Length: 585
Image 1 (cartoon, helix red, strand yellow):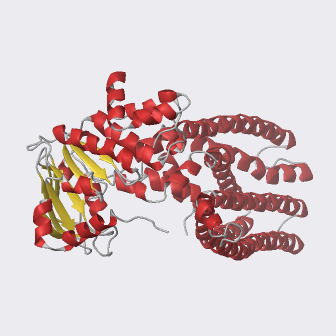
Image 2: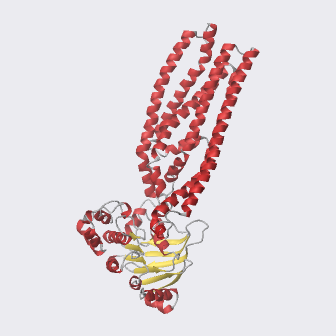
């Protein structure tokens, strides 16, 4: 188990723009605790002086009254200063965390975003952000101050009476153990219910997004996976509640036991004559205040533990390591070319490779089509060319230089990508095309849009080119979003274009626009296309046929592969025969 401050403070330093401001805030909190501890410790000699009407530690009653007044003023000033400092750090966190997370996210390879991080990122920088700010504003400072006060009280007790100091010293580790055990129970309870909550959230999203399919099957009111997830979450929450309750009960019971033990020891010393009655009462008061301070430390530690999931999520993003890349752009020896040489790749260590010893060469200005059964690695090849991931073996080169030897900006500057899942920004139709190339004129945007068939979409929209398409492009159909993405590629005029099922969501009429767009792209760019449409495949300069094991079965022209009579020939014959299918009564 980790002690909260030791574990948390280094993480917090990574989450602010001025980490050097944390140390002064912690030092002021320590000073605040020091003054509060001295004020509590001064009760022993002050009460003794009052009871005996004589000086204690060289001062009479009025001398101790002056000491209390000075300590009260110092405590007020330090508490105010501590609040200022900790709130300044908290505000710095709230101001900076979006930029810190954004900068870190921008450095990650595109494959990093294939994980389910969108929902977590959204929550951690929105609804959960104020909870993280509370750590700086309300938790760290008071926790440090209470620890300092407890240490001062123990030291003062040793100076007043070594036996009483020993009693308090023995009590302190008990509370440390309570803190560790209680937070351990909370951590174990969280480990039980959090995975089930994630599954439940996924099922709720699935239930919402799949209403069409569920209603068509008559399952909109009884979706078993969602019901099972609800029940599993309820059961997990129930088990976690018992664990967390056990931790809280244990903390409360041991705290009361320590208080009773301290009172018993003080009473026994008073009865035996080892301690005067009045100092014994003063010590009992001090012991009660000491145990309440230790209890507050335990509560603060548990409160920090409750924020740990958010800190874990933020820290996971902030410490994520981007793929290594050089400091300067490489000199491209063969602009417009793509090459995969003996490439093997698996999405996870120990998993079966998706690609095995794949070698593909795409000359500049040519068009190559990737075909093969589902799961053969066609899309994976496009992602490796874009360096979503690094290969396990072999080399992927773009422009004659391995992608690992190019900066991200240089590599992305050579590529235009149109994948199956197209995302449009919550902006106008024209703005979503213009994002393809910074500084493009309105004439260039409209020309690219017309070639991709987007002008027909604009004519149907209520505000034409100025119509907002909604978040993700929800105001447009899947085929319309793909046409916008192709218009972006046309506008960018990159030397290499990757098209992954670019015509998968288009009807026959609109496919003609895309075929024309692809022909235009061929005139000025190298094109690597993943497609199942006959016209698109047949017009490629070369076709790479992949087998179900992720290897290259054959490479050649359309006529060569048909004559070879392998998987491609069977694939072509089936597609060709399917074109003649029609529904009959």
